[in-house]
Image (cartoon, rainbow, N blue to C red):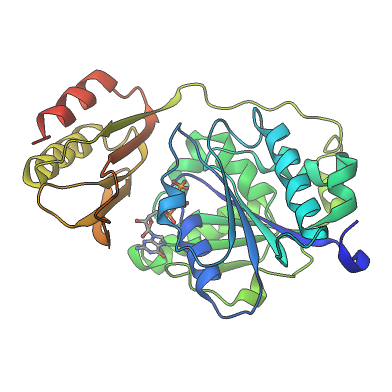
Length: 326
Ligand SMILES: Nc1nc2c(ncn2[C@@H]2O[C@H](COP(=O)(O)OP(=O)(O)OP(=O)(O)O)[C@@H](O)[C@H]2O)c(=O)[nH]1
């Protein structure tokens, strides 16, 4: 049990690949709410990029990158939650709440289950809500093609619509109607680059076990679920710097040729003679790149790019990227 017998509130932040979860999390971490937040990050792919993308203050950030939080690493989640609660009780660390960012391909149900079926977790934590970020540009196609996207909407206590700045109000209405059809319970709000009223998402006591048991009577028993096996990821890494012009041309060409299959890509780039990191990322055809922090003099400057998609020609990507190195 936690100090003062109060359970630690937990928010599960979910949403399909590239929906805007990290953007929202950064916004929450930057807000002056006076609370200390422990963040548990789970990423699809062997390499964690999000840890680098998070603006670090004095939060506890724990990364889990060796599998999906809803299956292989659920044991890790239980262990990490146990560790955090123990250290907090011993006053070795202090935090007021936990936010878990799931991978874009996670089924939130088994993650939520952990808070009810694992006694130690149940004793220390209270699941406040499942917040699902939905990408207004890509959600229709994601809901058609990936049952994980449907589960994430179905289990949401709040739905936050991102990227409404890129679509028409009519498209938002059509999408909202579809989301309501899947989940009538969850209020839907727009969120522009993560900007939202925190009172809408934290301490909302939104998770209702009763409501979930009504739609999913096996919620506390059924741990089976499936992932799209055809979605794979691979990582390209190099300590040699990139020729930025060549890299841009190559990335534009693969996005033109493989955009529909590229569910998500992101990376940290070390460009030749450039003192700053470049973060590049995208979803299907929407790509962006920005200079961020300076490389430190004693730091290993490593570029890391992660690609997640269906039927991607990994060798072609690897060879093309190699040719862009200086
Ligand atoms: N135009 C627009 N872009 C957005 C908005 N919210 C997020 N983005 C962009 O969408 C891209 C993906 O955002 P992330 O926050 O990294 O998405 P994510 O859900 O954490 O992605 P994964 O963890 O990789 O699944 C980034 O380039 C963001 O800048 C928004 O409201 N409008």
